[in-house]
Image 1 (tube, protein in one colour):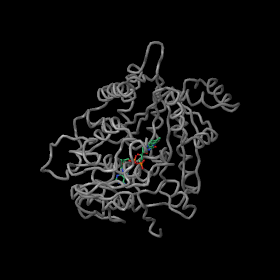
Image 2 (cartoon, protein in one colour; image 1 turned 90 degrees about the vertical axis):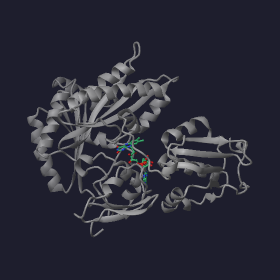
Image 3 (cartoon, protein in one colour; image 1 turned 90 degrees about the horizontal axis):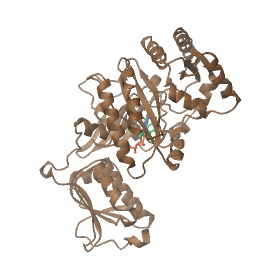
Image 4 (cartoon, helix red, strand yellow; image 1 turned 180 degrees about the vertical axis):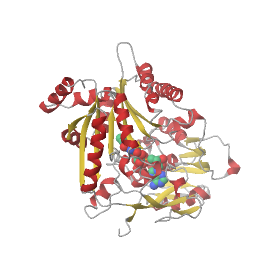
Length: 477
Ligand SMILES: Cc1cc2nc3c(=O)[nH]c(=O)nc-3n(C[C@H](O)[C@H](O)[C@H](O)COP(=O)(O)OP(=O)(O)OC[C@H]3O[C@@H](n4cnc5c(N)ncnc54)[C@H](O)[C@@H]3O)c2cc1C
């Protein structure tokens, strides 16, 4: 801590780190998944929190980490700084488990914010709002928190808030010809004198751009509901709606054109007499651009829900690529490179091979019923698609207690996660998962990352007799 560095385990969650306060560390990272996501997950995905405009994405506070890979353990990052050669730390950040498992993190932390001020502003139009934010960026005055809603999201936000205060606010906005306007929530955090000075300077720039200050009540309402949207999403899904989000990052010049993706979503998801609700907002401001996050609510077609959404995403991608400059690759999910984009762009991001000699094997997870011991046979490259297909076709009630990994060519984090789930299922019924003959590099990876220390599985040879504790499918149904 004297060097503003703390070492944490990758499984720690935001609230646990927060619990170490007030003396404790504060990387200032608050994504909407803060209550459940892990610090290792933040680093593996280059997560961007709600204050990322001020404190940066989670890769910024990572000063170093330990990565367990199939070929050995790497210690990456040399705080306080090093100019000796390329920095492999960047390779691990955002690698999403494809290169190895992050087993320890060294974080740069700051003193807990002594002041936090959040407030709302209104702009008459989206174009004016974009220009206002861009001006702040140009003068290096972007607040720590920036959330800039378009007219549709603003309308939905204002209609959701009830009570006399919000009725008055709506009436006042209409009276000042901001009835179709856009809401901006901004926040300043840090040492009081510095935060106040930044706020004063930004206020005059916002006023010059024609914005109206709505005050701290709007900011307080945002803080109160900052983690609420995913819970609302679950209720809406239960009510039979399609609810999804998309995110991309673009330069200030490209943003107005990228904003056109909302038309593609409207056209793709509209049904006779039923229009989808498409709600874009800007968050995570950078000097050169910002990220556009779009929340979509539409009628759900329960026969083909995934196909409908994938068709809409294809339309979005076509629109974003058309609208966007050729050098700015539209991206999804917290500005990262999702699998959908990889497939569409044809830029395959390979999993590290465990045995190059066996490349090309067809990949599957098969339930083998006609062997002396029922088991799952993993063959080829075990990635997200293979795991998804398995999960769709074999119900957990039928999962056996033995898996044969001898035919695995490569495995990514989705495969490792499935192994953990298979082991946890056995543990629930008092048994253990038998993992048969993992190839040596995979075995090493499991050992180095600590997976083998999970007490509810054993690594066995193919000839080993069945474990007596295998629960029968009937017992587990
Ligand atoms: C409701 C909701 C809200 C969200 N809001 C935000 C947000 O505001 N900002 C944001 O950036 N993201 C957000 N996300 C996405 C996600 O929560 C974050 O990206 C988070 O950083 C992922 O952490 P996790 O622990 O949930 O990782 P997981 O989802 O479990 O894993 C994500 C990926 O990282 C890999 N991984 C995880 N841990 C490790 C490790 N120790 N070593 C190597 N690889 C690892 C996994 O294998 C996987 O590929 C949200 C997600 C949800 C569901």
